[in-house]
Image 1 (tube, helix red, strand yellow):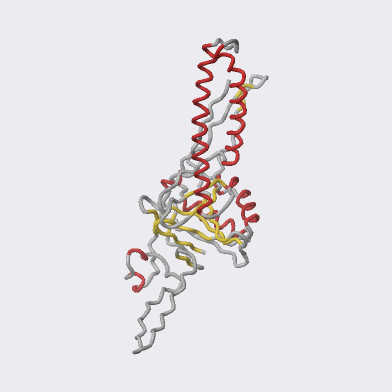
Image 2: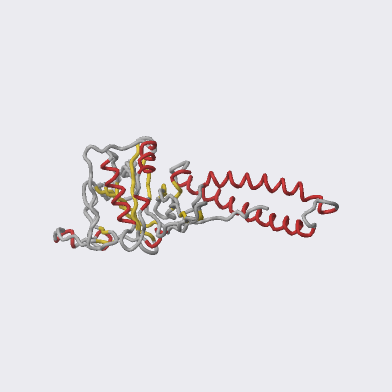
Length: 318
């Protein structure tokens, strides 16, 4: 009669994804004495915030306030032309970024077209390939295609870290991309041919290309590339609100379906007299409602990605 709409939430397989710190054998004694927060990483290239010294107040005259240091710039650490001290799934193999001196910052449309063509997300996440490997591969593929890219590492307030990529687009600003793939592939669907042979055509797996939303002190969020409408954290929050509303509507729809089927059974399937007369109009209402819900699902995408945790620290390696 009607099929139940089911919310398919793809748990982000990224939750178990971690990057490993690789010992930097070349660091000198001065860098080795740094505190734990900066251990085994190159020096930050941005200028430190200066310490203000109070200006003495002259008698009978108003003091001139010191200028406030500029807070412009990204709220994360950036490194340029250096290798990140991390490794992928195989701990002895450090991340190796290959930059292209001719690469340029792309437009969003160019970046999106590249991500859609790139096969990094088709890889299988597991013991031989983790998030750092996916991020390294996408970075190097983008640079080879003439697109300037960054390798990004995240620390969460709880749990293990994560790796992804960033692109400084000329029209949308910095856009974070997460192409870490899934753990499993879909099993084949087999059927018998008229000849009697069994056919098991390959099935397209989920698309793991995602725009990521990174803001320190907030949940790390993701939206599938094909349904992205905005890049601010507020646009991600709006998307999550729409998903919650859709899920609530599906629950209500499924409850209505069960009530309709109960009435249908009591009436023997005939819209005759009494309460049974409502069957025909109710059926039409449910069909229309189902069509509306399917339209909402198309706008939201096939996958809803679970947040991985609250971001505590971000490092960006150009």
